[in-house]
Image (cartoon, rainbow, N blue to C red; front, side, top):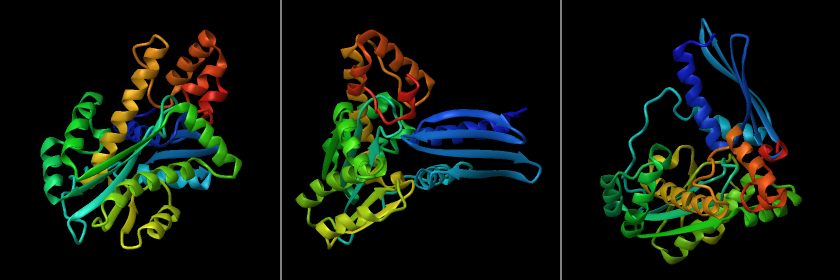
Length: 305
């Protein structure tokens, strides 16, 4: 029997897991609860125990995906949210940040955005209510998009719509890569666009999605004077927070377009069973091949259609 306190705790874990990858199944187990997460061929089990000595988590499965999920869940499950930072991060007072949207959504694009900010624009962003997009409603995200574009020093938004995402993912997978490699290409490309235009920007921050430093190395090779870091929960930095909003706004816009193209008001976000059921309906109505233009084919959801 799950008490209300443990249930609330599990709800927060469920939300954080879903931001990274689809939850394939979940169930009660002896003295706790189990989540099973799939991303492509990768699978991770998380057992959450609620005992007399407190709560603990036991992880098993794919090392790379497990690392991402651990970073996400451990971020602040029981801790208060950090205030968004407006601290000057660069010697010249100009810094960049990047974030992505859509990697945990079965339907829709993968979008990566980068933003260049300075102390003045950061203060304006904070005053406008810019924060991690996961803390904002869809309506607020779309309202803030134009504010951010009009305020920041510079920005770039790169999008892989489903048909192109699937093509690129297949190319990466054929070379032994996974989603993180594709994400890495996106972050490097988005940051490169703004760093090329702003050589005075000597600091860049990536919202961490992998323990590998390959993306840092790639950027340092192109921009040796730029100090590049990746940190978990980097959305506490305003440049990264603004990038998260721009990326999500573009993701939402494309979701609206995709829904309209099949006569629907909306398509489901996330990677749950509702998303699988909707894809199943589209396959029956338009044929399974059309899904390539709407969903990420390597998700476990696709195998259940």
